Image (cartoon, rainbow, N blue to C red; front, side, top):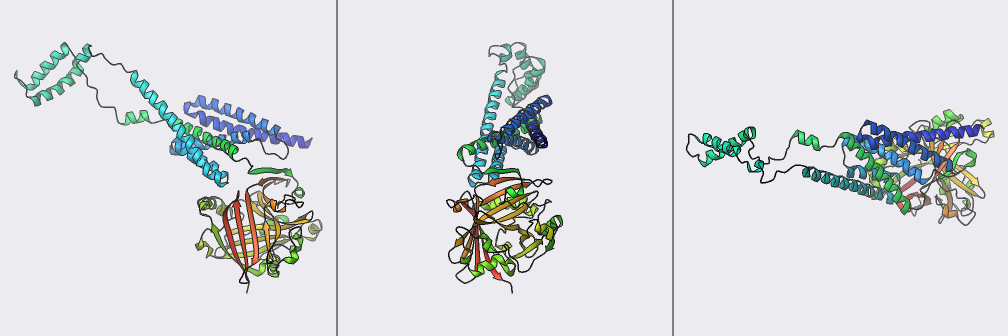
Length: 534
């Protein structure tokens, strides 16, 4: 009964959130037509998106994320609000708004193909809207000019006959001086005066003056700010919805999947359920974690490794006895070594990474990989902080925590902060690395494989264990950790892959290549050189 009440409360919260999103979107889309229409639009949006959310959640099955159509509708609502704000602040036109909205949606798709597709679809939607608006404006101008009355050529107004002609002749003679004939120059001047006088005295001929210009004309032609903002909302929503529909048709495989919702930690051994309790992770994370979990905290623990023993990883495809002793020493006694890193980025990913680094990695204090050789020269500091549980907690099954912290040597700014664990499932051993995030964790679960020459490969490719009783555990997982209950809601992140090869080079030195790819497209290789400390 308590669980049902909790589910009902959660559903009300979800529907309420969707209703607020719909209200904001409806008001944004209808805001250019006055306050009354905006209120009606907000009400319609709240009801529409709220009902859609309720239907999607009720029909949602365990282990599934909400239906695609509802996710598209929700993203369109968010885009409408953002597009309204952007156009209101900047006055940007439909092509600019559409391109930016499409680019943002594509960037969130992560896949390089989607990143490239997003701005194209957005620009197309914005361009179509601009053409539609231009055609409507042209029709309006044609209609407006057609409504102006044109006097027939035979009418007195057109001919300026009768008293008008007499007045012209009289005034023209007067300006010419006496009763004599006026000179051509004076006659032209007289004509100007006559026209001015005729305009006030009689029905003289009127020449069409120049088109009206100046502030009045400009103000009449300039769209109202509310209309510009509403246009931005419509274009942004259309761009995002169009992009997501095209993506769903072109890219059939899912980028994420719901692995578990509100699950117990023991049900997900491939997830490291340790989160950051603040907005910044940083190099002091393990020390702060010790204050929460209890136990004995040791900073820069001597002679420890990221794994306790490679023997825990034995299984099909990996025999620890075949590993070179130097490779084994690195894993089991990582603290004995210094590391140098050399990143090699693919050119296509550099702009996106610079944006991610500035907006996410540096403020977060996590996953801040060096970008160029100048940063490499700052050097890298490597240390392992540990938390040893109290005897009673160790007896209850709590294991020691090993946090491998890599930072820039000159400032101690974090590069990576990872919690390294091992576990066994069936006849296999795995390495799971948890990267703490605010109230969440990003976990890479890696399968060990023997490498020729005594090396060790750790890979996230689940296909590498297929056909041999594989569990499907290798991969990447984004997990939200409920603060009170510690229950886990986990998404599988498909398409992202990594492979770490540690081996002894031809010169007898320890080396490693850590390669990353997204949907099969490589984007980064980290080259490490490991040396024993003096």
